[in-house]
Length: 411
Image (tube, rainbow, N blue to C red; front, side, top):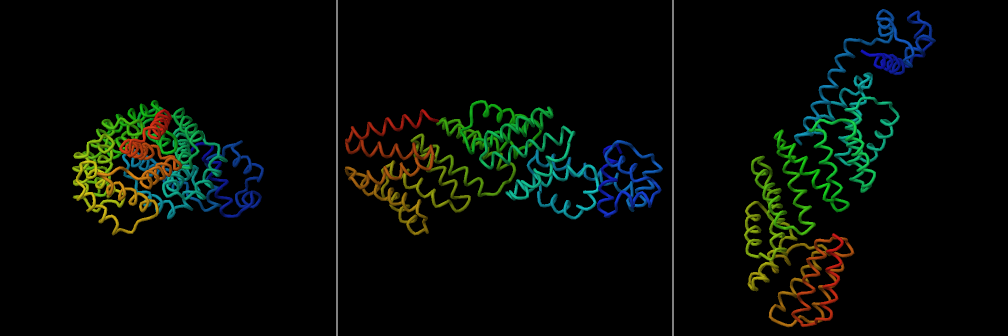
């Protein structure tokens, strides 16, 4: 044990037993001034005096050393499980709770605190996260590995709280602590989560590709799969739909290798279907939707993809069939709004769009514009433009064309 570990052990054990320094001095024959120096690290007890103190406090040095080994083992196991995305957070949490009193006595307890932090971030227990952050920052941690993990997960937590700038700052601090490729890959992976709150920049995408390459090198296939999904979303944002589809298809292959649940595979097929819709390849989109249906029950929103594809292919009977199916579902306000729009569009397939349909389409577009959903804003402004062109209202159509250009320029 080093000097700091001995000082921590004496101080914590004395406090836990609710014994004053003076009383401990009486029990051991060591002056309370010397015990104070032991606790603040100004002086190190001899082996004989340390055994006297620990005996008085009913503490086994052998057990403390074994506990330290146990803490380091479960901490390293957690890091390994995190890298391969197979961490059973609940399992680790149970072990920590069952042995908490024993672990708290150990100088390495700050590693347990980091493990608890990761657990509570995962389960969005924000009050516990904030409390642990406050406690951790009161400690003078010198261990670079621990600081790297702490900064990384604090940064990730801040990103989840939509504090993007602060989150990325902590992730950059994490990168300064340790430089083996596995940890850097994990930091770059977490940096990509800024995509959920601000558009992923080109450099961030490059970081994610670097992370993916490291995950592939060490056969962390679940992480590779996650990277493919995020990269697919990135390319989709910048309307590079072919590249997005390629990433989603790579994820599909990995999900099948990993024998993941069918719901995930279903979701990817419906996502690919929407990319083909955006590419105006409606036959391919329908094929993807049909494959998705083989894996389970599609989401209510996915009925709209069937309706739109059949409408664009001129198969109004099938479009109406899916409209009827969707109308039998319990729809929320947003889906009811969309169902009404699609019903009107299909009904006026071979007619000049009337004022009510145009107004409905504009209302839906403005709804997604106000929601700051760029992808759906562009999709529905295209529908507005198409309907206006069909009506030969070129002046109004030109206005929405300019608005679409503005949206594209802000990607």
